[in-house]
Length: 364
Figure (cartoon, rainbow, N blue to C red):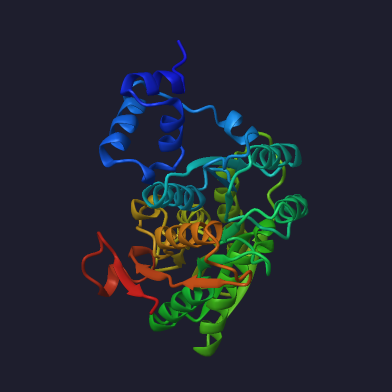
């Protein structure tokens, strides 16, 4: 049997109007006891409001939308999780989240759903707004005049942006390599990944620091042939092993492999071991993102950790302020600092104690 608003009102001895008013946010006109009775009755009876009926009557939806890349990518999944936690702590909004699988039809359906359900704001998590796939979606969302905030995706001059200072993270990594005496590095990345702004910033930061320290760096990228058996996560791993094998086939000595992310780094380590190289004695390897798997690899992975939770919480704060009309700037940009975590694959095993937890170097 479906529980209705009349059931809630009857169980507490108030009118349907009063019950509706309290459960829809207009509860400050009533005593604390009345509010508590109605809210407890709604929970006890497992009452669920008819959201579509409310929307048709012109009421606010009470919904926030989220668009993010597929959740098999840890960094995007964590940002989405932290954003959901921050939203539920700071507000009574419900969250609708969609994974963008990088095909047009699925994205169009997600945007259609968010618009038809009149979400009051949308978080864009780690999305590249310059891709042809995303351009139309961004235009539709902006045209609908729904408050938008971007987390660590491509910057759009009309959307507030909160993200990571990847350039500075790359600088920290490059300076660490210089301090350890490495002089000729390679930046390993999948050929398709080079289009992403985050990867470009990482490369630019490492390059700047290495060149300042008198070292060199070359980009080694490889295309991954289409294969229906390759999952999205597997493609990341394949980029590293293919790029490392390509690097080892080159003439000239490279002493460090700077990888675009941790997945690439871990498969690069495997390729080195298959070739009989020792890490880091023969080849230092570093990652980026500080994903969980890098802490348990052999050797443990030196990586750059970015503030996923702080980024998510700040983005939610700005989105709620925009919904409530207290933020009017479209060009708001906030970059939060990274940290370098030094582990066995580049540094910690020779001179630094406490290799289980790693040595953290703050970006500030």
